[in-house]
Image (cartoon, rainbow, N blue to C red; front, side, top):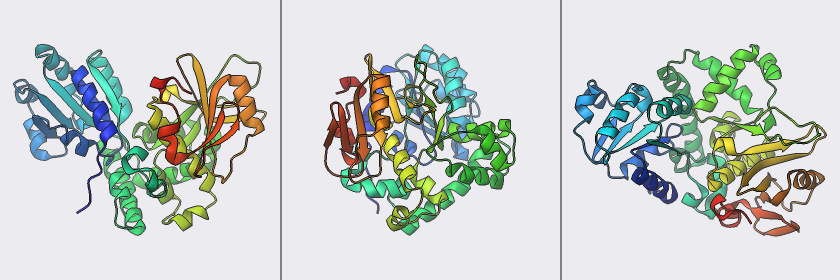
Length: 387
């Protein structure tokens, strides 16, 4: 029997939201652990809308829900979006009651929840395991297999890869059609594979459209689907008041390193270290670790770049102070001209260089190279205001 890995940090944050808000929405990709975590909350009532029996119980939702007390969990709520307007009535009628809703598609759920439950709902994004969940000694495994629990805990690298291959097939053949999206699975799979080769690159929609043989509008639609189901991250560029010509297109990342490796045909650590996408894979993996540690929303993180070639992988601000991070797959990172330009132009209070080594290295005043395994310890959280 596989050992259950506790999601201590995520669980504590969700419990805090449940205490403060009548409705808490836990959003994340399929198999990210939402259901397991929600069941650990010891809800008084539980509805899984992928279960035909529970779906039938909610055929008349007001009758089923209005007399329930305590904490009520509704899993896979995207299958019954008409519940949002009813939830508003129910929480107003009985303020002490709490609803926890789980979903695998973000944008429509956020829109529906925000419109129907304004001021009553909190959103929490739960993705795969954090580094804090598995421990710094498991960094290489987390990078290779990704954070989706069944992939990470598989008995072998081969079993993990096989699970991810099946996950992708199920996502394309079942999950996407259930969202009402009519795109042939082979078409979206081909697009996803092609997109994976742009991982870590600045996006050019016209070039992507030409490569795929589709219009810009079609490419944007497919990208929107993959972003809205948490498969890809579009990192937006930071624009400051400057005379320099700045890059204005987003950068693209596959959010889960294990799924990226699956699309690239990578099974083992040896495959990864010999792959031409090694550096890009590290950049995306370390970026996701850092963003999740900081607890920043997608609209709070950026990259920065100029047409002259200077670039910063990650930029954010808190408390009126600006911070940055670079992600380098190197034994001994060094201070580069690009880092110096970013530090000067953006007025960074501190710049961290996240790399796979073991030592903390002071590269310059307010520029520190830190091991990825120690990001939770060494990169200040927003609440601490930075270093």
